[in-house]
Image (cartoon, rainbow, N blue to C red; front, top):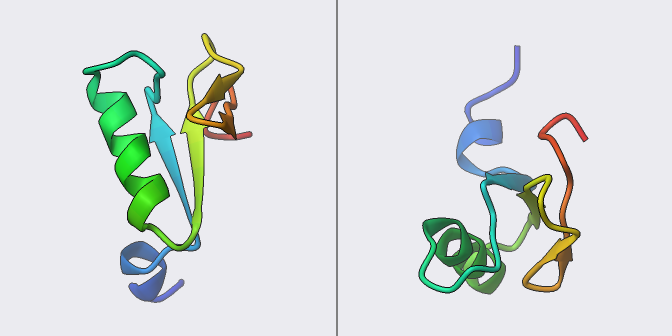
Length: 62
């Protein structure tokens, strides 16, 4: 079993529902993470190839 550090200080965060659509929560969350998170931000949305300059994946398992 891992430590709680993995939960509270992750190296990578997936944003499920990331979107390029202005005003959408998924865009705001992705944008904020890209601006303030030191780790990797992975947008997850099967409807996009890219969100805010990051390659989108179709599912969390990717």
